[in-house]
Length: 464
Ligand code: FAD
Ligand code: S2G
Ligand code: ZN
Image (tube, rainbow, N blue to C red; front, side):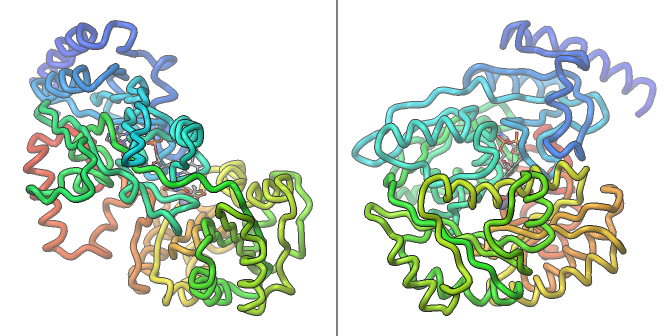
């Protein structure tokens, strides 16, 4: 940066902060390490930076005014919800020149519209709060993930989050039927009618869902709820090889209309997590375990046992007989991220492969990781039904990208995606070319340039 541009940037930012304080109130423009630190590094501790300030608007109008001011002053913004993202998309870079725009104060939850089963929800509402509002009204949110207490609806939308129930209800994209958002020029677009069919012009909500704060700041969504189903049955299947996991996924999904959760765990992750939880294994630890949960209006246990029998694994499965047993089995899967985090900053690669290639991918993975990082510990688990594997590698320096390159090349070779549900963030922007053609990337750049020509929205995220 030249001398004049440094002075210029100091002048610009010197003018900016008082203007932002007038918009959101001085108590909601945070500066200085103590106040901003928790906003500047992510949940894993791998992604951290330094911001000019954290700004916390209260509503869409304030978001629009803040974005317009930042645009006028050419100061970049990093939209942030619960800061549980795992790809470096929710934290500022190290320049100290970016504003973290925290949406957590947009926490209004509207009433459930009985005719449509839809509910208007502020971007800053936590997933837990949405789930509670849904259940109180006799519905379910139809999306669940381990970070539910902190992850926000705006973040779920921006990442097109998946989670434990995507195998039945789809990702956030399938749940969101309307969006209100502020564009980089400070204008507001609102598509909140909740029409099941609305083909009048380009589908802006579809474009903004999964855009990771790079095309707009989402301030409200219209969420489509699903029926609340209280009868649950849960089983854990011990299997001899990861290939077998891939083989039984399809038949289980085909034979269990009440299936809601279908998760994969592998031996190292099972052991690391049981140690972390200080929990005894509920059955022999085998190369992999598959967790199956069914949900219906009436008890689906018979259906579940019949399906396990049908694919010849009933003899190697345990079925939870009560809520405590169910909780214990679910806890082992849900404990994986914390257990890995407890082991230090890991290389985290959330990837997806077609189910037809899942066996091949899972079989090749240990060799690829061992070659890239001899002696490292591979913890692989994830959403089996979605072909979504969370590859966590403990050992290498997180800035050593050998593992990233090797695993993502293997994924691309299996016809998969470098990001299944966590997004691209800053972490994987450099690897997009592995699975997106030059024409595809040019089209994405054209969209980015059209909506954010000055690149003030989350620069460096998604598109390097
Ligand atoms: P943040 O982390 O604050 O931001 C994430 C991205 O969205 C950033 O690029 C940010 O700029 C952008 N963003 C946030 N809010 C807005 C907004 N209002 N407008 C525009 N852009 C915005 N994810 C899954 O998909 N499935 C899982 O199973 C899952 N399990 C998890 C378990 C744990 C323990 C943890 C820590 C995380 C898990 N995640 C999972 C990842 C994370 O919870 C999701 O990506 C979630 O969607 C992030 O929401 P957030 O509010 O924390 O967003
Ligand atoms: C999961 C969470 C984060 C991780 O547990 O399903 O999405 O550890 C993940 O990859
Ligand atoms: Zn996940």
